[in-house]
Structures are given as structure tokens and as C-alpha cells.
Length: 437
Image 1 (tube, helix red, strand yellow):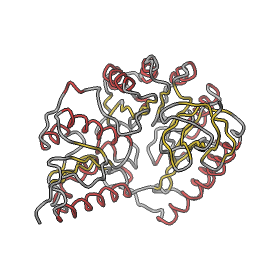
Image 2 (cartoon, helix red, strand yellow; image 1 turned 90 degrees about the horizontal axis):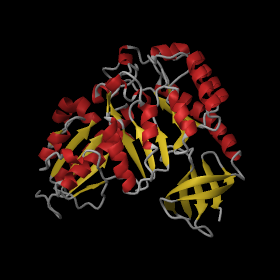
Image 3 (tube, helix red, strand yellow; image 1 turned 180 degrees about the horizontal axis):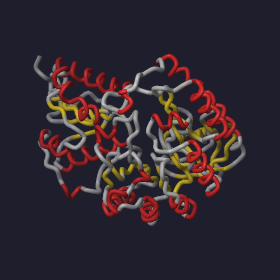
Image 4 (cartoon, one colour; image 1 turned 90 degrees about the vertical axis):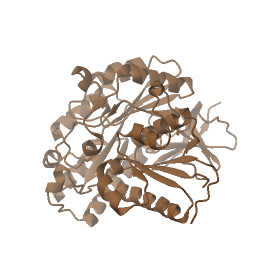
């Protein structure tokens, strides 16, 4: 069937996976528009003749979502609804050879470091002068800022080094330039991301420079919140806490994925840290900044995880009372260290353990939220949903954490602005309140 082109060479970028992929798609979009090419991100108007899918290949569920999306657009190409289909990102980097044979409808596959080649295929030139400048696909008042690529950690379960390579810090001057550009264009909250943000600078100078970077970003006048994601617990740079404590622009918020607490599991996962060291680190963080919000993630069902290991993890979570916690089930990924081990925890048991751990966290979250009733917090409003303005406190990152719901009736808020909100009610993962006049 002949393709029905509504708008010639209108490109739509579809993004799957994490916030790091979002940034990559935003860079691609910026390059295309700078080349005077009609391009959009997540445009569902069905009037695009070229589709670019930025895929995730981290774990089985993410890979399946990426493949399903590719197959969906492959069918549209067969029907003649689109002309060209290109795939980039982690899944493409990891499985390009196999996928090329299995899904011939895709015109070209590109890895994570092949942006210039992808641009060339799309009729665009890579513009070096755009370094530090990009459109953002998130609401205009917050943006993700990627400060490094790749990872040097040898975690047994993780395929990121296979897809993203060794750790490579972005030069500080380019980060500052990008942050200033974002702030100039209305961004009030910067969320720093990398596979390990606290490793930043080690490959450049031999020393971790994340504290220095945070201090310099805080000098940008228009920024009000700077948030740190993905902080590796092993050899955590404690000088970050000094900067966080002393500078009100640095959110008292730390995303520090621990994955487990059993020494046997930490060793099997190759995390480079012990239970005692983790507990000491958490104590140091809370002693330095008592009001800090700690977010973590746990991984259950890793090869060799016994009932006693899981019970130890549950006990640790109950005792530690993390403000935010997510749980993943182990995915047996080829070419990782753990792939050489027997995947000896059934999927049913993995799911059961994940649900049990989340039930524990749900009760912790409710207890902590109830303590906020009657108190007033600074809230940044992200959107309107039905009868509510939806916002977040300093303790909450977009999409993954709690939200504050303020009734549109008898309240007034502008999206992208801050306001003081008095909390009137709390549930497991959300707060309700009214704006303080």
C-alpha cells in the first residue's frame, strides 16, 4: 500500500525508559529543529511520516515494552501509515544484530553513541554549537540534567555498562552552560542524573567533584531547587552533605539505591559495600541533615537470595523508615555477571517478596505522611488534573514520589509557580491541602 503522507518529513520521537533517555531524545529534537526539520516529541496526532523510537534495554519488562512499541509502528509502516521507522537507544545498542533480522520493517538501527549517524540519516547535520542548549519535553519549570554517561561499577545484575560504556563525566563548563540556558528559559528545578551522580569528576581529575558542581549550580540565580538522583552508596562523598545543608537551593533529598542489606546478597550483587557500612552511612546522613528525604530502591529475587536474606531486608526497611522506596524484581540478563548464576528464585516468589516489601513501605509512608497534617510546605505545581492542582514538595521528585493535591475550587495556583500549602489530609502516597493566602 502506498504511504499516505499528510505532512512531508514530519518526525515524531517516542521515548521509552528512564530520564536519561528523555534527555537524549531532547538533544535529538533540538538538533533536528536547529536543522529546520519539523520534529516533535511524543506527538500522537497520527500525522507523522517518520518515527524514531528511543528504546530501553535495562531489564526484561523494559525490553518487552520497547519491542512491543517497535512492532506497533512496524505494523503502521506495513499499512502505509508511516514511511520510515528508525530505532535508537539501549535496546538497539545491545541487540542490533538480532533485531535487524527479526524486524526488517525498521529502516535503520542506531546505538547509544550514534547520534551524528542518526541525524545524517534524517537529513540533518550535527551542530556542535548547540552543546548546552536543548528543548525540554518535561513541563517547562523542571528539567533533567545529565552530568555523565556510562558506569564503572561491576554490579552483577546490571547491563548498563554493556549499553552505555565506561563512566564519562561531562565537563563542568558544559554542565554550567546547559544549566544557565535551561534557567534562562524558565526552568526552576534541575534534577541531576547519571548512572552514579556522586562518581562525577573521578574520570577527569581522580577526585569526586559533585559537591563542587552542586555549589556552582546553586549560584545560578533563577534556579530554586536542585535535586540529586542516583547516588551510589559505596564510597559516598560526604562533602555533598555539607553543600546540601548549607545551601537552601540544594534539595534536602537524596536518591541512593541500596538494592539490598544482607551481606551475602551485597557480595553476590558485587555492590562493594557491607551492611555495617550502609547503616553507618545512613546514620551519618541523618545526623548531618535530620530533615532529609531519603529515597532508595531494593532488588529482590537475585540468584541465591534465601528466605533469611529477604527477612533481613524486610527488618532493615522497617527499622530504617525510608521516606521513599521502590522495589524491583531480578531480571536474568545475558552477558551480566549474574547470568552465569542459576536463576533459582521463581518469578512467583520474586513477585511475592516485592509485594510484601512494598506493603511494609506503604505503612511507613502513611505514618510519615500523617505527621505532615497541619503543617505548611513550599509546593511547586506541575499540572491540573480534574478538580485538583497537582504539585510537589521539596521531598518529592517528579513521577516517582508523592504528590500534593490542592482543590481548584477556592484555590488559585499557576503551573510552574511555588506556593505555600497547608496539609489537611494524608493518605499512603499523597497529601491534600489548601494554599495559604
